[in-house]
Image (cartoon, rainbow, N blue to C red; front, top):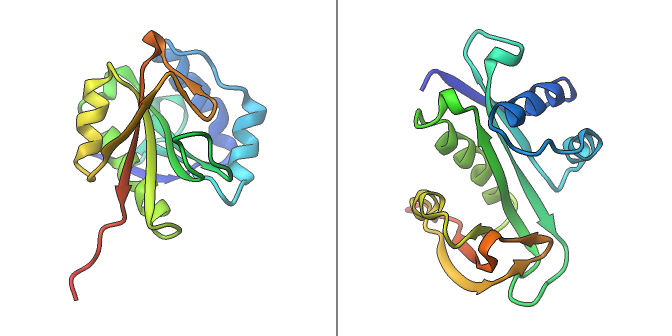
Amino acid sequence: MNAEVRPAQGSDIALILAVEAKAGRPLPDPSRLATALDDESRLVVVATARGTSGVGGLLGWGKTHFWAYDDDAAPAGHYLGGITVRPDSRRSGIGTALTQARLDWIWRRALEAWYVVNASNIGSIELHRRWGFVEVARAPSFHTTTFDGGAGILMRAARPTTPE
């Protein structure tokens, strides 16, 4: 992978929107992205091609969420939010790098990380098993996330321990 992952900056918002458009996804609200960038309880990261800038250089992005309250089966805590990788950069390790960066950030703050996913998204479920995510519950929604088809999975991973 010839990319680097770094925290997003305000100047990345337009590039993030361009990646979402290329992926055919609904565009996030730029003001909400700006708020997330300034929120110390959240992380927004971007993957960029080494030595490039501008729309062509942003390969993908991802975020975390912090929920300060329990919501039925979904406890308060740090959650991985979605990632988007540019269609022409998929299957090149970008999603893995974005996920590792977000988890490293969470592990510095918490003993566990949470993740919600559509039950039909087998690729994402298998990707997250690499980090030890296991299913905790199934429901039509967790916090503010609802799922196409009505079935979502709440997954949890414990912070890895380092050998002494």
